[in-house]
Image 1 (cartoon, helix red, strand yellow):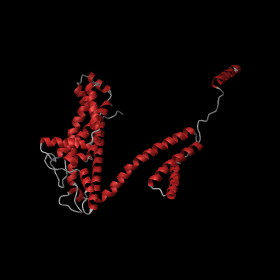
Image 2: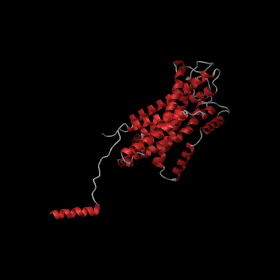
Image 3: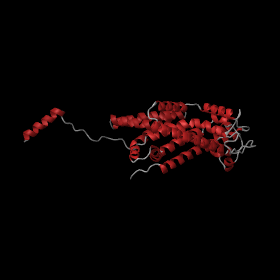
Length: 365
């Protein structure tokens, strides 16, 4: 029996080579190692910036570079090569995330810092009629933004959703589907100023040259909004499993009822999110509204009246480029309008998330 065991061990060694005791664990850096490395890198970068008289951008750049070098070298000395590569890539990912967040944080801080002093009850409920110097409000711009954006959504959402349903459920992979997809992609790249010129030419032919009308702004924005709605809704509808469609067909449900009762409700959360992104994308447009909607200092509640209608982006543009005398009041109103526009877009995103959570299909527990 002993001879048989020794023969087996010699056979295993000849096949696998001599057995080596490989440790299952190795030394690890402390949990606070990345934070300590970052603090050390920031200290070294601060010394370099003081000596070389560099600004904040240089400080941030050298902090990131020194942190990557320190954490990788430290891990290589204490742990092993594989752990060092892992820490290097992890630090690169977090550094990229931090760099991408810097413009957003800077934008939010700048708008809040410059816009909050202008926010008041009079600013939100007044207009700019007969206002020279301090005072005035943006109620006319808020009303114009909401009405024109609502008109664009009423035009774009049904067209975009129906187009997406046709491409996913009916068109298949034929020539018509490819042509329609190509045209939607082309519309995605249309400059906003071209949409404004198209709406101005259309309403000038239908009514009179030089017309300024709110619904024209809605038409111009709908040209920019429709392709975004089509592409987002199309992708959401394609994510619905075919098993749901086949189960409905097996029960004898017609195709139109399957789409309206099964496919669309299943993808509703993504559809609402895509529509909200499209609305947020056009809510800040300025160029087409400068051409077709124009500018006014009074509140215009009539979307179809032949009179100018101001929106928040247009108000911000004119307030900053033509602030009046003294200029600080106009520029303060411009920052306040920009802050209100950002708040409106954030509220739209919040409403979209609530609607998506309310109507999305519930997962089985």
